[in-house]
Length: 273
Ligand SMILES: Cc1cc2nc3c(=O)[nH]c(=O)nc-3n(C[C@H](O)[C@H](O)[C@H](O)COP(=O)(O)O)c2cc1C
Picture 1 (tube, rainbow, N blue to C red):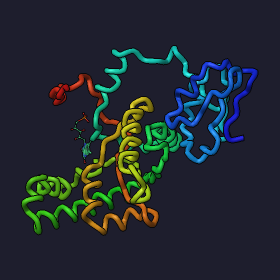
Picture 2 (picture 1 turned 90 degrees about the vertical axis):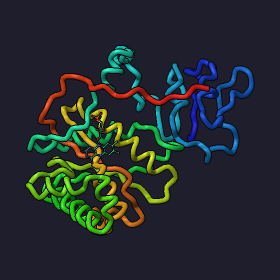
Picture 3 (picture 1 turned 120 degrees about the vertical axis):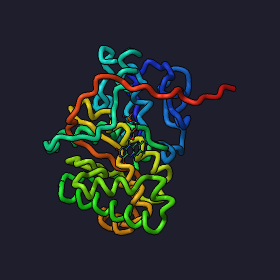
């Protein structure tokens, strides 16, 4: 059944009616359990808020039983001080050890990232994980090729982004593009999927945030992302499925350094009305 309420467990509080973002549930006659409004099945986005808000575990969707949705452990909730430190201590990690990242850790990172918000709960994000260091180095090399070309053909842009310096580091044997990271995670989606870019970026932001809990660090691979917009050989090398576009890339690995302090940031520009 698409939507089922156990009349024995339901305490008729109407929480599910209120929680449904699409207003698809109604209370019905006095004493009866909530029900899906006739004909709206197709409008359900399967967000599971109705299942998650029910205090008695009475409500199930055909895709989601309450017993499959873990209870929130109140003892694990973090207070403001912890939450603030958690967010402020996240750092872009640019120096990695040579240790490869275990598959189960990468899998965990990706699984948890999948809980990021998604427009209409559409979840269009696909992941490509590149663990092969030779392939990562080849991608860095292609980005450097693009930078060399840009410095030559469009020096204004090249100079604005200091590509000449980046190229010099590469020529000196460093990898200023992918930072010798042992792993890249690419978020891609069908090119014209609604809000795909936002969904991909949110998902990788979750990955960056959860990384330290796995002993890992991450950084956005902005140079690679930019080059995908302008340099077809790089897009070819990524070899994403037909019709897909790369919307975000992070590098992941074991950090070589530990940060001791949380750097200052200028205050957010805010207007109040
Ligand atoms: C979209 C985006 C692209 C980025 N690209 C790169 C990059 O290519 N290389 C790099 O070292 N850092 C990159 N960064 C990291 C930023 O430089 C970093 O967030 C900033 O310096 C602040 O440091 P923090 O993240 O540790 O607070 C990128 C960050 C974002 C959000």
